[in-house]
Length: 80
Image 1 (spheres, rainbow, N blue to C red):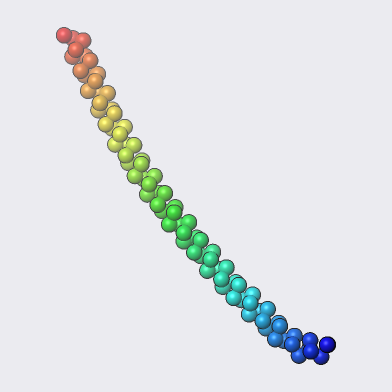
Image 2: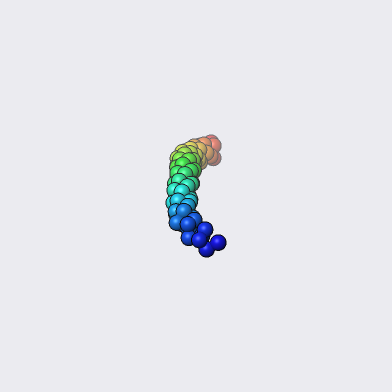
């Protein structure tokens, strides 16, 4: 039994090293894919936020113009 282990041990050590190396490569690849996915999602959300901010600025400007027009109309109506 001990003789068999002496003969097989180098192969088992090699196999463990090889498997750990392959596992390391696989986990690194998965982590990179996950980072890229998160980056794409972040870019999409940033673009959506940028668009909504621009729309909000436009809406605020429109509202200010509308309020000015209402005040002007109110003053004109009041003067009559």
